[in-house]
View 1: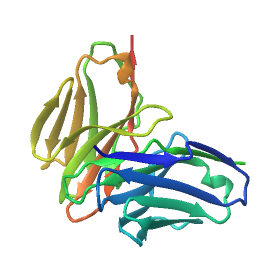
View 2: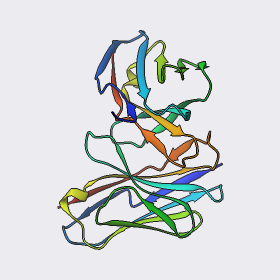
View 3: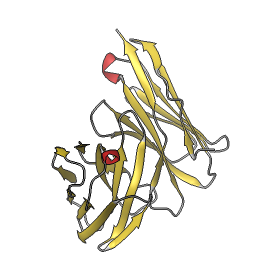
Length: 113
Length: 111
């Protein structure tokens, strides 16, 4: 069966510090991968998605970046965090077909102080 | 107009009642529809998927799809306090690799 992992689970970082969040998927190959952010009490905001190694599509302009160095690994990064980067970061994977379901990881809660 | 619209709620129902959650979408070429449940502080989990017009039942949950009206609903029978959560509607448009999510409806089931 497929599983998706995210780490760390929680993170407290000072403003201006770098960020690296990692997501890995097991039990599937060539998945579509997604990074979402959810601010407190708000909806899901799609940040990036990837349909293959090295292929990244950005949905919103921001100081975050994403990379996909391996088929089942997706990384979210920032060189300098802003207060507004605080939130709940969710990684998700989905198969290739139109009817494929999307599954979410457990999430990383980030607080920027 | 938002691509996927949901009433933010909260929708309050007593234990044992039927909860009805609604979602409308704007793009007629949408082909796949999903309902997720999200407990506070947790990640969304899939409840139901539906692809054809009509009803699809799974235990206490029934998803209803009407493509002509661009309307998807989720019925929860015999609502339990443990059903209290935010319910997210998601839509996949044909040929696109990403789901579009509504902002969610908060459901409160009182004992």
